[in-house]
Image (cartoon, rainbow, N blue to C red; front, side, top):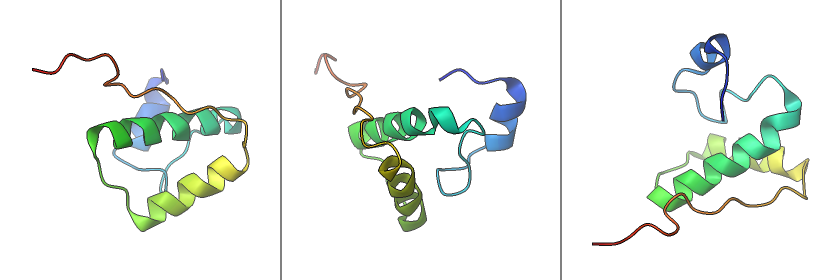
Length: 76
């Protein structure tokens, strides 16, 4: 997701437990995409990050899951 320089700088390497987009209307999509990427690449999620993701997603039950970034990638 594209963000302006100031928002990107404020995020740094923060996860969902420490940083969410300031615009509440895109938080559901942001968290859903983050989960998709982490699941696809087998990345870890801290307990605090998992709790924050759950809190966000409970406010948007209609948020679709995103396809894995690895879908359709050739194996070799």
